[in-house]
Length: 494
Image (cartoon, rainbow, N blue to C red; front, side):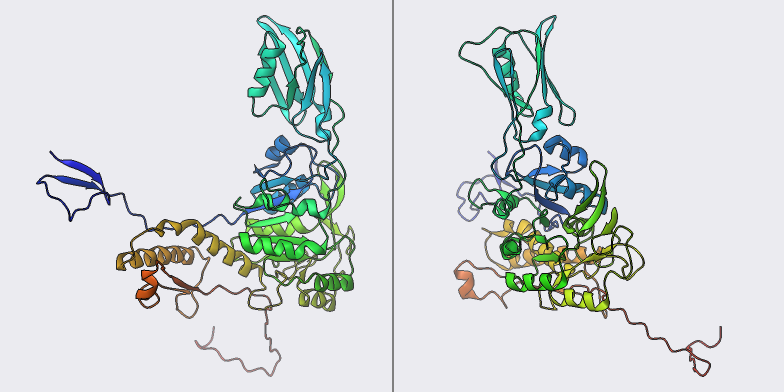
């Protein structure tokens, strides 16, 4: 009688019974998919939504459904989403933070207490209405931004059960011991409070389970992140440690109306020198918001948004930014005299970037340097941070399948094939580039870097070298002109 086994489940050297043995081998895949490089994490305030929980958002419609309308606050997460969307970003993980004094809106209807499921002032616009229908009663819970939910039941007990079963319900229903009879009526919830502006520690949050603040972005696949509107330099090194551990490029910023001298001093005093953090100068941006009108906003979301829209080998330098009306230093009309070459040199030498107009390519708003906060010239570019994090996160997400495999030449070959195939795909897509005809990568995984002693202890090592493409930051054009200039051509006259 023939037998069927999964490949690897049968010891084919110990068969004693004559028979047919069929082994099913799974299709082998030696491909490695790249990690997402455009997900942007935002930690900020909101008038609604869960606190300390990362919520996926892909549009302003998604944001409003989860967090309500934008607020007139520099720390508002909705502003960061809107600004980044205009730069081309398309995927977000939003974490709401509060100062702990936020309260949920409450209302009484026919002896039953209705409480908004989230804290915040948005709950004050929730209207709950009970009306009679042909089959009993209907409870309609509506909000002009968050939506409308309808529940049916013949009693408050049935309506409360229907609300509890709805994972997207806007309210909770608390029944008293003596449950009243249903009757038509309506109530607008009140008492919802956003609370004050959270402290820096609330934005940073805690890494203990359940994680809060910045740490709630752990494991969410973000490649960039902002603590929106936070200007406290004391948390920059904490952001750097988080960014290094998670492969996230953190966008920091100085206070509004900052001076060059104070910015340089604050950066030095913070002890920050890391490719994981980009520090934007505190020359805040005038933004004409479609909800709140003209506002002064942090430059963080502009820098993060344009980087999220770019491939990881590229820099934010000289990329036009959308939606900027002006800046504090340049005013609402812009201006070419906002920064001198000496001013820019002071900032860039200190590892601080800035958004200004004009840019090297013309009279438009753009990030002016494209550097992170590191003082090391080999790693100070946006492209180094982004591409290094992209490669590391791609390898971390796809190479773990080889753990537990038997160590032999076949394993070495499979590892090399997977890595070389991935790097080759990056080359074909322009993320890596050829210079002087030489491949920009090499992979070693064989007996030359895996000794018998190491193999006996269960170690396998793959050594990868990747040469990144440079960024044209200082473009020099030499011009020689005049009537006495002798021009030589290789192909004769025109």
